Length: 253
Image 1: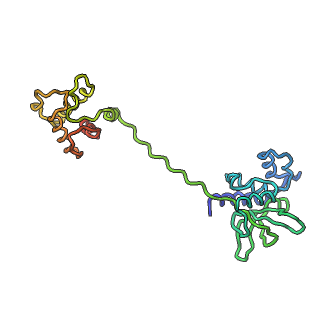
Image 2 (image 1 turned 30 degrees about the vertical axis):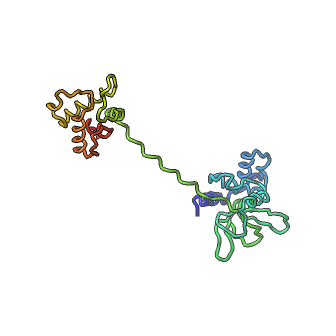
Image 3 (image 1 turned 180 degrees about the vertical axis):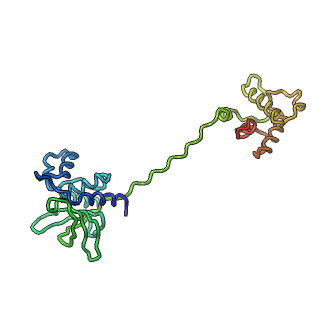
C-alpha cells in the first residue's frame, strides 16, 4: 500500500459518472491533445487517456505510469519494463481483449480484488462515461505502474543561533601559550596584554604578583592564573588559552 497509489484511486473515484461531451469529445482526450500536442485526440477513444489523466493529477511521473492513447502501446510499455503479469493487484491497469478483437482494446484501473477471483475496476469510456464495474473475463493481463512513494525529505538542520558581538570577538581571539608575545612587534602581544588584565580583573592573579611582569609576554604567572580560572570554570586545566578559556575570562560561556 502506498500513498501514491491511494491518491490515484481517489482521483479515479472522483471521476465516476463523468460523461463525454455532446460532440463525442472528452476532457481526458482534450487534456491528452494539449500535453502531447496531438490534434484530434479530443475525439478519440479515451479509456487509456483516462488512466494517464488520473496519473497526471496524482503527480505520478511519466517514467512510472504511461501517458498513451493506444492500449497496445501501453501494454508494450509495461512489458518492456518488466511490469506486466497475470496477477490482479489493486492499482494495476487491467487490459482486456474482447471477442472479435485482435489486440488489447480496453483498459481499466483495478480498485479491488475480490475473494471469488473477480476484480472491481474503474474504467473510462465505458458506455461513454466513467464507471465502476465487476470483471471476470476477457482479461489479457495487467500492467503494474510504479507507485513508489518519494523518499521523505530530510528535515532541515536547526539553525545555529546568531553569535553575540562578544562571542564574535572570542571567536577571533588567538590561542595563547607560555612564551607568546616575546617577539617585538608581534601583534599577539596585545592579546597577551588583554589576558594579563582579565586575569587580574577575575582575581586569578594577585596584582602584587604581577609587579615587574611584562604585560605583553605570556609568563609562568599568567599560566598559573589561567590554570586557576580553568579549574574554577570546570575546563581542562592546561594553562593554555583556547576559545573556551577566553569565553570564561570574558564571562560569555
